[in-house]
Length: 142
Image (cartoon, rainbow, N blue to C red):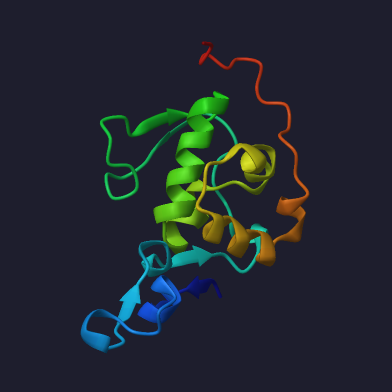
């Protein structure tokens, strides 16, 4: 069973240190970073995605014009994994993520601190991961 981490709220006193909002009233605010619900799989064994080759992601996961990615490219694999981890649900993660590729790319993924923390709490081995060698056919040279 996946773990869904939901949003959190803080009161205005925590935001501005005054203990009161406008007119002395304390109101609740939802922080943008806390309003995003992240899904974390129960086990890395639940990730059945392919480890190489071409994948296509839906517009819901990747809003840009590019939705076809080559997992043999470190840069493209990173883009797919960031999108699926940040925006994907259980089915997306199970279908598109591969545990071996995840371990190899984890340290280089650009994730929100809260998302990274949730995943690393569930999978401590990711926190210890260092970028692994990527495929030698990486075409994203700059």
